[in-house]
Image (cartoon, rainbow, N blue to C red; front, top):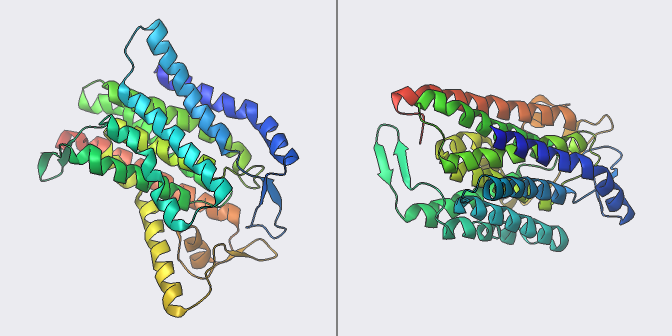
Length: 345
């Protein structure tokens, strides 16, 4: 429990303590982006997500220091691999913010961030599939499943964003679901958490604390925008926690909406090509702040299209609420299913 409290507290305090200075610094350097989903199109400091990256990594390094110096324990190599992957995702995001890579490059670059997790063979290759049994995937897991899982989570996190508070709000929901799931699972399994699971919940707690603190500044109306330097580490941190904790089944539930968003995006590309129409990257904003979209081609366009007349703030609240319902329903379903042999991987 101490690891969770320390990771959460330190990560949140770093963001809260540093954010006012960062906002001022970004404004002075004129590092701002247009907040496109508001009628007045204000300029907002952009790229502050690097402090979220520092908060997560810093809190985890602090816990590693306690483990090695005070407890005199050997650090799990998987945790160190996760740290390197998170940092690499942040570096890729920083490069993208500055060079604005093509979409194809954006999709492939996060694969690089999975290399440390692959090299250290992080995760458990044995997977229990309901009604089939336990399968040992061997080298297929670290060499194929891990990079695909990390790349998808990083890319889909980057894609499922662009509105005030959406990315970090979804990260709050998903990371909190991991923390709750891990804390409750020993009561259902009767088995204490192993080292990998302990490290996973520590990573999730660091992400949760930093994301909640960042959300205070990023919620509607945003005082700061994360940029890719913030969004990519969000995905990498979630992926690292899920893989380290052997939570593949929970990951499927948590990223249902992200997969749907990705499929909607592909559908939109096909639609534009066949109709020979103009590509719309953002929703049109009316004078009253309501969003007008060309169709249900992304998750964040779905409810403005279905309901009509909702603004950015209401849309984000609906999307975060939907994610919370799915995430915590999955936690309950998997925990209750443990006695039946279908809840834990």
